[in-house]
Length: 424
Image 1 (cartoon, one colour):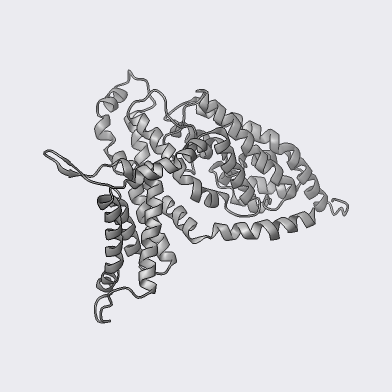
Image 2 (spheres, rainbow, N blue to C red; image 1 turned 30 degrees about the vertical axis):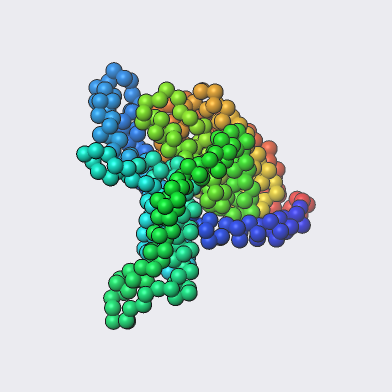
């Protein structure tokens, strides 16, 4: 068992750790994360516009009548999330290259806006369509943001910039340093969008259509769940790695569901926005470790595990499970890795089928991830009480799966505490 652990640590953990630190993946991850406050706050206006209350209540009738006004903050935040993401990606990627991050962020935003052709509406003049500034524009946002910052970096490294005397204020000097890269990006994007008449959003949408379709299938949910827990088994933040690639797809699902909900649709188009993972699969954190914590509290014979269970119970209730991951530990623990990977896969199947069969409403609201799972699930589904039942069922399933493996590990730990030598 020890040799197997060493093999995993040397041959698997190290390469995966390097992947997790890849510059562009980190910039995408941090760029999307930087927009989360706007997404979370904006999504709650969907809940206000369609409160989970009886239709006969006065507040529900008021919300229905004023839905258009209530949803304006949503339109200016979550609905145009790509604008915020572009700024975040540009800022973080430029910062990683040690070039001016503010200039990198602004260049990325300009590049995104130049992929959209304004239209002229009588009495309003030029109007910028907002549809490509939402989740559907995330893929283009990622591509043009990275390309724009790379152009900025190359110009800086090759000294293709305008240099001003040292006496000039730093803010002015940085602006002129970005002048040539900005000109290159603007001309490039103008040629593509205006001269050549290419709608990058339509092109990319066709290219990623198979990914969007596949990601909303049961297999498309099982694969990222497996990869996240697989990476975590070696101490690598699985959501950071997999989320950098998958989150744009998840955000497209979330925005499509949110838009359908805001339009009063009777059914939502997608099963698998990120809140599906957050509230029904990662109950207590990656690996659905709340069930493991419950087992620790009730069945531990080992004093260490019993005390650890008490210590981590509150954080786990709020989906903070690093103390469990590294305190138990689960990381590089051949016994507990098995249920750590298997449990979320089982919960994925249960939750996906429950949602796709209409037993529970699909998620369309981004609730803060530190809420206890039943509350978060209730909010994310727009107030569907059945989501609470599904969360409780999933917790029970996780307890059952973790129990036999934990008992094996608890026996080993208890034997160690008793000073026994023959425990392997």
